[in-house]
Amino acid sequence: MAIRHDQGIVLRSYPFGESHRVIVLLSPNNGKLRTVAKGVRKTKSRFGGRLETFCLVDLVLYEGRNLDTITQVSLLDAFSNIRTDLDKVVAAATMVEVADAVAQEHESAIRLFLLLRRGLESLDRRDLHPDLVTAFLLKSADVVGVAPQLDSCAGCGATEGLTRFSFGAGGVLCDRCRTPGAYALREGLTAYLARVAAADIAELPAPDRSFSGEAMGVARRFIEYHLEKKLESLAVLDG
Amino acid sequence: MFEAPVQRLIDELARLPGIGRKSAQRLAFHLLHIEEADAVRLGSSIIDLRREVRLCSRCFNVTSDEECSICRDLRRDPTVLCVVERAQDIPVIEGTQEFSGRYHVLGGAISPIEGIGPDQLRMRELVARIDQEGVAEVIAATNPTVEGDATALYLARLLKPLGVRVTQLASGLPVGGDLDYADEVTLGRALVGRQEL
Image (cartoon, rainbow over all chains, first blue to last red; front, top):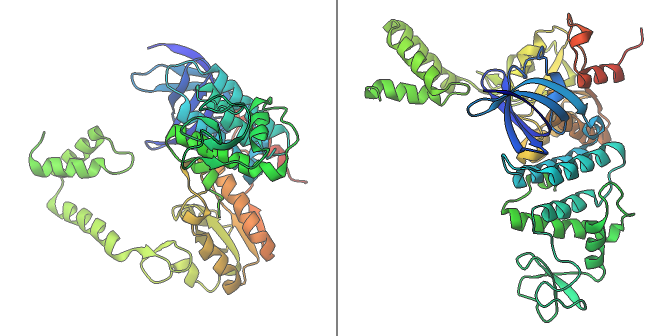
């Protein structure tokens, strides 16, 4: 059993025993970490609010047989402004839900970690950009190797007449390759999705509100198709 | 593997929250040695709990009547509602002796990550009480977690347009604690919510 240092973003936590919590983090070097924070549910806990969801922390861990135990926590960023806006909470929750679904334990996750960190920073420091979650979903698909093909037909490579989007084929399709059930794209949506996917997540271009909702819908269904699960967070405020 | 009655009890105890296999075994062997009258009292307490206790039809606190003792108490101020996540939170707030209004138990908190939205909580029942009882203020006494804060924000979004004042419990330093040991998040919120003297 050894003591080691690590860094991570808190993805979620759940009660464990009388007053402990299991804290699930995304570490840049070790991927998804499951750790135990003892006594953290007591008001006198020395960890206090440092292990709340979305917090970026430095950790000292005592390695255990099943779960590592957190012995020290230093807060690097609490992204406190997210917690004061319900829509930002839902956006941040969607990002950590996707990160939690794609990250693997004991595997480096530097790109995913940096993407999540920059996404949370953007939410915390600026107004909520309507395309931020869309950009995160498209970029996380890229990180895990399933980036949607948006510049040419996923069937034949044609660059003209890209009118459909197929979740199974992994991108846009031309009229000749269209398959039953492929999603019909409004003119301009493919270019809009490509623009959002290519942009720096911290410097997204000005949104076009006539496309933002539909772009989010396509990105959401695409990532749900590949994760084989519904994104719970985005559904919370539906209806 | 133990004799069937012992194993059955261990299996049942191990289903309780916070009780693992080892603790369940320890409790089972303790119960094996207690007086029969004590065992019968424990057993009937559990059965009575299920038979006699239900949820208050107004606030969803636990009660053995149609309405809980707090809702029946005419001295309580009906215009102030304290909204809590769980019924267990009510005795904690009552213990402060600082609150004389009524309660509403939501049955949880909004948790986007777990897919728990307002529809899974008793929000509709809360809105119905606003008009019926002439509620003027709702205190969001949810846990100071991301989920609790999200619930408080939702309450504000839902109830402010109805002309209801929505407040949230202050958060900050524990009384008797040392500033040295405060974490940055708690201390930051204490600073934001500082009071003029």
